[in-house]
Length: 378
Ligand code: SF4
Image 1 (tube, rainbow, N blue to C red):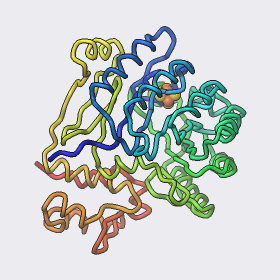
Image 2: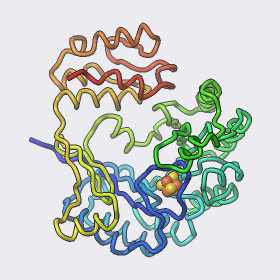
Image 3: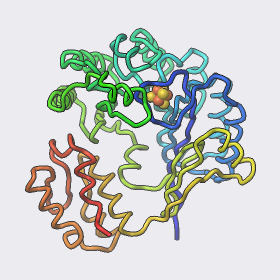
Image 4: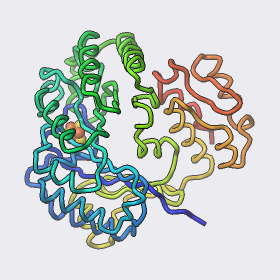
């Protein structure tokens, strides 16, 4: 019997600015049919018949780009039929510049219990350079307001290896992040994506990025400094105080299933990975006509599921459990992946004991390029 997913991702595709590095599914909010979008999203949600969840995550775009009334409509309708006693973690992403007092009030009266704040850097010059509209003062105001409203499960995102960024500036960012006294931090190196302002600049030779060696030094410093301060490095880019891991993100890395609701959202239900239509008007039309907006569905084969188990699981510092793999897929681990693991062990990228396979520090730095080796030939 298929079991229903116990996690859901809800996508709000609106932003009050478009950052120069961003390739997420989003649009500038001005003149967008936000009310229509929220009504359509709730229709998709209700038709999905979601009653019991362990984790719920609202991401974007920027969920807090919508007004306090719209946020209230969204949260109250998402919660309406949910058994809140089962909901362990309810996260919303927010941008420091958007978190007004009335929006925090709305969050407070909802079941949201975790806020993930897109800080990116504390440096006002860098914030402008990457196209963000908030400033350092607003970061502190948002954190203070959230704490005063009783939110303590707060995470911030930071980006390092920004154009022109020095090691000292990274150290300054880490120091300020630690001073916030919050239990979770995500630190990503800048990735150049296609069709972004930054990629254009790079092509024209106008983006002065740190060298790969400097980026590796920054990553090393971040890990050392955060571990020294009581954070556990539990996933390539994520650090937590004991017990404060993002349960929703662990669900992805554990290769579990989840609903994806909203324009451009992806989901994974009954062995099918699907993606919804991205452009808002296409999404609205599909929901009105069909009650769902799936653009493509991929029925995963057993081999693809095994590959994903590694591709996602190796991101976690705890690695991939050999027992779980063998139970889940009914295959011998060493027959399937023995040679690949041996090679990656010899290259100093993986370690294996009788129970788990996990990345070394160097493996974690190289990340997906190591995990890709687990993609089996057809
Ligand atoms: S990074 Fe976030 S805030 Fe910036 S454009 Fe992308 S989704 Fe919007």
